[in-house]
Image 1 (cartoon, rainbow, N blue to C red):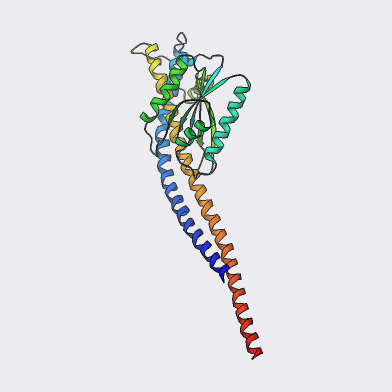
Image 2 (image 1 turned 180 degrees about the vertical axis):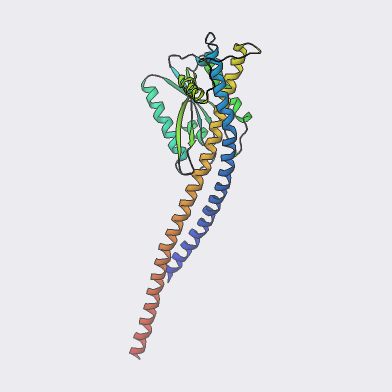
Length: 297
């Protein structure tokens, strides 16, 4: 019955693991709801500041900020948002594979690449991967503050201002729904022309524009206003990406832990069947030995 004892020990070990994964699933579900609330709370600000920047730019075509001027791309920077912890399925690995695919395409064109990692997993990966890691932030936590990100964002903006970077892209996991999270790459700087086109379409739907133009009273002048607004715009987009990535992380972890618990249950059922067979075989052997001994007597 030695085999039966080993199987029983395995069943007990897997049941303990199943308890842990079930608890982690419930914790992730609770954290996901809070993360979704934070994501929903920050979306209006991120969307509104994007539209305000677009409106101000269209209303004053005579002034073009450096963040609005397209350049020949010789150096590109990626702000990559990952999670601090693992056990969330392929969330981080899919994102990093997407980044590496983009990097290979740019390097094939002779473009230099730099990185800014937001999240422990990304920071560890790029330190091992190599390349120019300009900034990194670890341990963002489940409820990050914008102040935790500003230092790294300013490093990338300074590199863009000084001509060390010609373009900055933002990479993160977009929260589609509880079952689906997809890695996306958005151009952050220079401001993509698609922003103006999207805002014009939204304005047309909402009848916000009269005679195709916008009129503002500025204080101070438009240059000072745009200089401040565009920095806030970048910070808002990066923060929105971080909170959306956290919601994606918790959803992916909840699904991963549910799958782990279900798989543990399947393994326990298989082992229980093996145990029952081994136990039945041992009982049958003992009966046979008893019957054989009685016949011999």
